[in-house]
Each structure stands twice: as structure tokens, then as C-alpha cells.
Length: 123
Image (cartoon, rainbow, N blue to C red; front, top):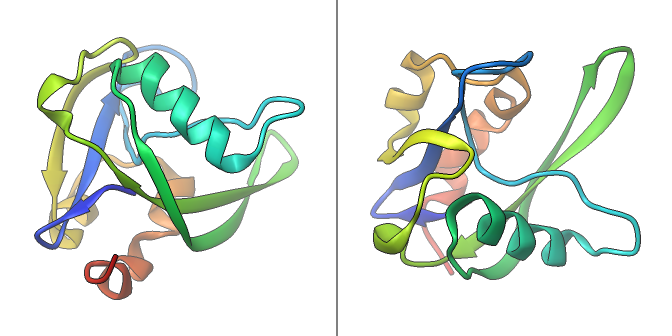
């Protein structure tokens, strides 16, 4: 999660698919022979054309999707979104926990919402 001034970087998925049009904390699946940190760097480059620095693991939650239990890990991410190019999203913005709670957010990412207050400060 990129966190700045108490707000979190979020993006809205393009229309289509199970989660089309929903807001999310950007990231993605870890590919074979790839660490979580490497996956984050790759995903931000693919999705936004920006290079990121991956920091500490902030939180972890579990959810079920199509009868498969998955683990969602949130890492602190540092980057400058001013150069972001929307490739797999229709828009991005910085949002507070209250704003996120009012948006049409992916259910799996919403599980991380209670952790935002503890993550909004620090490195």
C-alpha cells in the first residue's frame, strides 16, 4: 500500500470480469519463482508504468474466491504516481479510510481496511 498524508493509493479496475469497475489496492498475483516483493515491483510497472520500492509487510488476510482460499498480503510501497499511466485501471486517487469505506471496493481488499489506521504513519 502506498500511504501518504494518511491516505492510501487506490485504483479502479477496468470494466469486465468478476471485479470489473471496483476499486482496489493495486498489486497482483505472485508468479512462479517470484517473491512477493518482486511481484509488487512487476505489477506496478505493468499496471502503471512506474517503478516502486517495496517496503515492509503491513498486513495479511485470507479470503475465498471461486472456492479457493487465498492469502492477501499488503506491503508498504513507495513511488511517485504523478507519472502513472493507466493500463489496467480507469482511474486512481489517494483516499482516506472513510472514503474507501464508501466506494465500491473489492471484498478481499476491504478486509485490510481496519488496518489502515495503524498503517497510516511510519516508514
